[in-house]
Image (cartoon, rainbow, N blue to C red; front, side, top):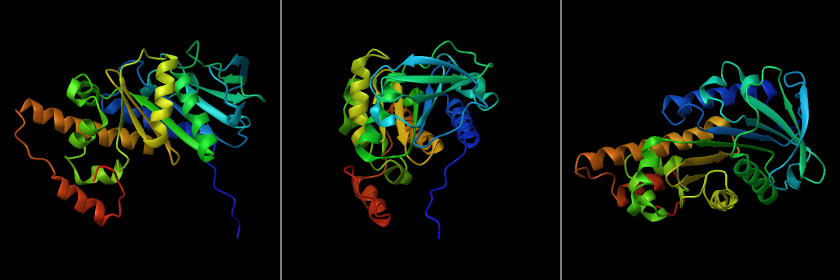
Length: 274
């Protein structure tokens, strides 16, 4: 029996990026050109049929562990909701050269962006770190700006891991199952800065979602693009319940810690938040 892994095609990955972008927009987490998506494919992928134009670029940080793979990255200012209809206008394919400091960027004649997303350094840093540490050959990274999560991060008493996770994991039984690792809360950093990138890379080593205070979130998944979006959606739903409770004067009980623990026990979930 063959043990060769099933690898999605370029078209299938672009379709999944489109579905993810549409869903992020549906939950109001990507207004106008906000939000960005990248996918790392750790195998040789032919991209020139859909992205025939090429140019050499310098990477924002060394990525020696990504040599030989392909990164699909959204362009700066492109609307995530438009990927599904016209991925070639919104996405570039990046192949990292030997040494990991430069790459070839492949684009389509339909390209409608001048450069890659301004947060490419955070995406690249996460992919490089996860491949180096865990040896993954596929990973999706999604940045979005869900309004309720972002709002809560503007409230000082929510801006730490303990407070944020205790408060947003208490509203649905599914939350402890789907977000068992919880969310890492980061302080405010200038978007696209080296400080933002470094803190985000470190946060996503232990967690699968980081909350960029007063800005948005980043989620990763080594299963699919839509799984990364699912994590954002569960977290945003918990934050919406929390916002509703704040607006109602804090009247709701939410799930107790004992009830959350009983759910975790039933589904064999190991979590620090139980």
